[in-house]
Image (cartoon, rainbow, N blue to C red; front, side, top):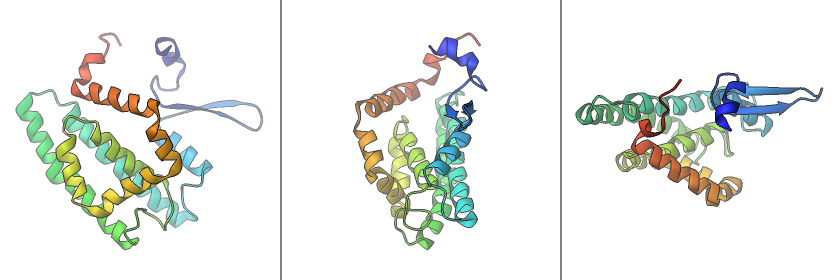
Length: 198
């Protein structure tokens, strides 16, 4: 029951992850980046050394930032249809274009193999695929996806992550499909489900 459980979370929001420690304590982690990095370390998705780990975190952060910039400038822009259109155009032509170009350079340097570091799955791969997945549930998904697909090496990251057996199984699940549909409905009118109370 979120109305009850919300007050027990560190920052009154999701995501949260409860970790059971070896000494028997339960520690609740909050904030997406913290949870993502904890799980990435646990499942060996942060590379083999400090250099690789920093590269992975750099591209992870960049993909999170481009998604957040879209949310701030387009999703939550309620200044009217014309202002939202101008914000979308600026996002597509400046923010998204710069993100694509910078990631594309690195991905080509890494061999255009669908990975940011070496030839194995990393947190950066997953975060970029998630950002693209997020764009797919937006009302503006068609124009965003068209722009992303112009970069075959960037879109290959999305396709490579989608082919991972565990991720592919999750994407085939009813739960994933339901989540996608709920997200699409939410982003059509984000304010429709926001309670008036704090």
